[in-house]
Image 1: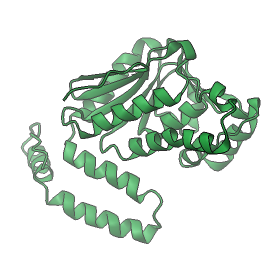
Image 2: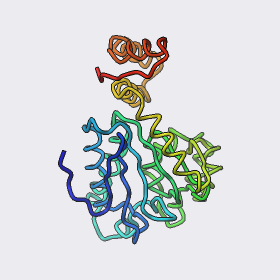
Image 3: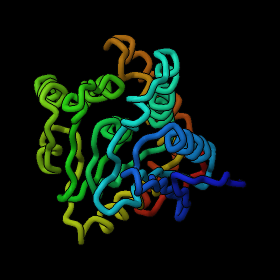
Length: 263
C-alpha cells in the first residue's frame, strides 16, 4: 500500500503495529488543521490495512505529547462559520479513533494538554510516563474546552470533570490514573518495555474478534440498557459463528497458540 508524504506526523508499521508520531516539535505539536488532517489520513490508512492490528499515538517532542489546539488560529480574524468548520477535524479524528476497528494506545511520555487530552481519551488505552501531566488549561486563556467535554465526561467522574474544566489545573500521571484517564504509569526507563508488552499482547489477538468488539464498544456506548443488551446479543451470535472463535476455544483446550484465520 502506497503511503502519502506527511509533514507534521510520522507513520510507521512494524510487527502489526502502526505508530503515528505527532512531529511538529516547534509548536509543541499544536493540533493545527494540517497536523489533524494528516493524522486523520494516517488513521484511515491504518483502518483498512490488514498489516495493522494496533495503532500507537506518540510524540517526537521530548517533554510534550501535544499542547492542544492551535491558539493562534483560535485568535484569528476568521468568521464564526470558518471557525466552526475548522473544528471539523477534531470531530473526525475522535470518531475515527472510536470506529477504527483496531485497538489504539497513547504513548504519553510528556504533557497531554487541552485538545490533545480529547485525542488521548478518544483512544482505548493510555500508557503514561510518571513525568507526564494532564489538564484542560483553556479556561485560563479565556476559552472553554467544548470540543473535548463529551469525551471527558465519558471517561472521568462528573465532579472531577467539573474540577478539570472549571479550574484549569494540571494532574500528575498518578492523579490522572486515579481519575480514570490513564491505564498505566511507568517510570521513563520502563516506558518502552511496558508499551512493547501491551502492543504485543494486543497484536496477538484475533483481528476479526477485535474488530467486532471494538465496533460494539463504539455502538453500544450511548444506547439505553435494553437496546444495548439486544445489540450485544446479536454480536455474540456473530462472534460464536466465526472460525476464529472456534479456533480460539480449540487452541485453549489443546494448550497451544491459536492460528487466526480472520473469518
